[in-house]
Amino acid sequence: MSVREMSLYIDGQPVTSNSQEWRDVLNPATQDVVARVPFCTREEVERAVASAKAAFTTWRKVPLAKRMRIMLAFQALIREHTEELAALISEEHGKTLPDAEGEVGRGLEVVEHACSIPSLQLGELAENAASEVDVYTLNQPLGVGAGITAFNFPVMLPCFMFPLAIATGNTFVLKPSEQDPSSTMRLVELAHEAGVPAGVLNVVHGGPDVANQIADHPDIKALSFIGSTHVGTHLYRRGSEAGKRVQAMMGAKNHCVVMPDANRSQAINNLLGSAFGAAGQRCMANSVVVLVGEARAWLNDIVDGARHMKVGPGTQRDADLGPLVSPAAKERVIRLIDAGEQEGASLLVDGRRCEVEGYPHGNFVGPTVFSDVTAEMTIYREEIFGPVLCVVGVETLDEAIEFINANPNGNGTSIFTNSGWVARRFESDIDVGQVGINVPIPVPVAYFSFTGSRGSKLGDLGPNGKQAIAFWTQTKTVTARWFEPENVSGGINSTISLH
Image (tube, rainbow, N blue to C red):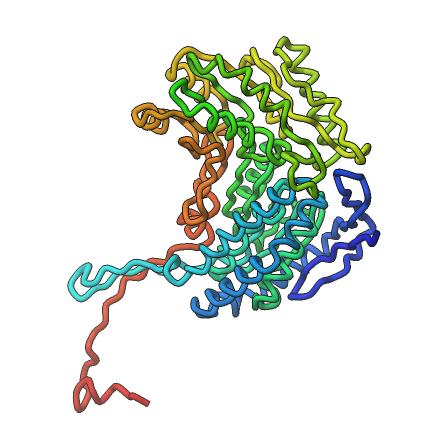
């Protein structure tokens, strides 16, 4: 098996790193080494930023229509290479091919939205705000932007960042996850094939040292981060202290409320897919289900559904979930399951000893279900990021809302009900950024902004939609008055040349 060596991407070209530190990228189903990624040097990060800074001087003045045409070509190439991108995601992340193809589709939505940049970046004008005085705004790019992404969506998360950033006239430095970089690199190659000029989009690889250098760098004006709460809080503080805009979309503990009037089969099937799809490695996974009133009797159906879900390698299309991304991730999930059992939760489905035929070294953990979970337990307080579902029972909708609002995170939540009144009450009173009504994973379409609240988000503006345009641009307000020239022989027309 050939092993890919990840290049940096600087000034429009793949660049071999001079770093002495390289890490293996493993197939999580087999532990085979499929790629090697460098932890690049400080000088290489400086070179990438310098390339982006130099390219900004010309890219910011490229007409909107030309940027739009590049985005149109880029989205066509993503469509053409969806299977290739999905295969790379599956090989290094472990998610099933249908799930990986879905990820590419969600990333594609953002690029398609960026194709509307001529209308998205429009300013405003007030004619005769005062006597013969016009006031108007220009939405101008900031300069060099940067993005640092987590491992769980190696195509979608970069698409949440650089397409709109460069479409608005910024240049970009991207640091993908070192755990599964190949699909991200292929995405960047396609962007350049679509016509992104040299220096506009650059890639560096590495760990915390590289992330810190990006956060500190004075020539980087805005930083987007999607990942863990610990890292996001650190980078937000560090980047803000360095004077840059920062958006940090971070950890979650998402709840799915099931009312007794809900469509029973639809609610259970949807919450199982949300909890266990991608092996639970989604920041939007519903890892807690809150059964209200008589819906508590549906627990056995949830348990039965979890037991019948199929675990397999990502290439097995009929598998419901694949392996976790790394042995360390598997070890952590098992440790948290152990803690749940020790702290008194009822373990109804145990995925710790999951075995997949033909893949003895895979990072597999099967669907796991706990009931009798309380807010004080470790399995409730921590984001497990694995296929573990916590079941909580309450008497009323009020109790469900109070329970969810007491959690420090506010990334996403869902409710299943056939009552419009209940749904409206829930969406009004719940203190969570993204709400699904009979929708298990409420990630909005790309022309709406990805939001989040409380401990799940730092920064006023999120990715995608109008908020992303505002994040990647600065508003310049112009107040203008024009006077007729004085003492011009022949009048005003004599001063105007048409040639």
